[in-house]
Image (cartoon, rainbow, N blue to C red; front, side):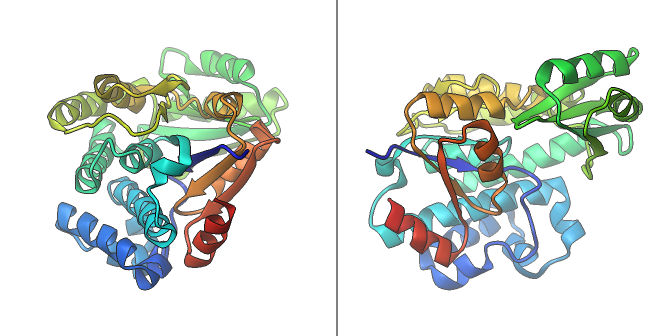
Length: 314
């Protein structure tokens, strides 16, 4: 018997044009884009469909935009399939901002509230560190222990931490820009396959984000969080969570904490899930899952044709 998990992408999956086909094909998706636009007081959907790529890549836009596309996919799947996603899901998870999409899909968070929280999260992360002072780099062909040793040696009194353990030998480090540069040099000296600086505007998921975590703590304290209808795998624990107060706390910790994606996918597979479906823009998480848990069947849906194919599989 098939057991299904639904996962939601994070930053880096955005592209101009995303979501437009969903908007044009499904009234349920149009309603999501409208709700997000109204919540933010901005025509974010226009920016997504036909806007400027640099403007879309600004983290305060990217975060609610990717959330909107994921939820527009969820609603299209539900309206076309005649079921609630939570009736088909054993559990849900999301990568970084994707955790908010997972929580909205599970009924913990309303769409308007999720969009507003992610707008604030993007702005708070941007404000936390002056431009140019922090950065991130991807190390490819490296395991967690090796990456940690590179961080320790490159820090030299500054901050450099593992931001994402994405699995398949892909680890992202984050911290002061000078330390990131030193890590890239050290990685090359140590024979790491590739070390590349990421085109991001801040050192996400590092302790430099502490001011942003404080802002999110205040915002999340006022947010309405319901008990999820299915368990959510949290980024910072790689374990199931269902208690709204625990979820609130974990979302605050997530701002500065490591995204433990490799362990999250391993946990999903260990819980007996057979099929993992990535909902929203791109298929980054499918690619990672194939390297982490090759026995897990994966597919992605973010267009009308992909939704049609997924409905047959469900």
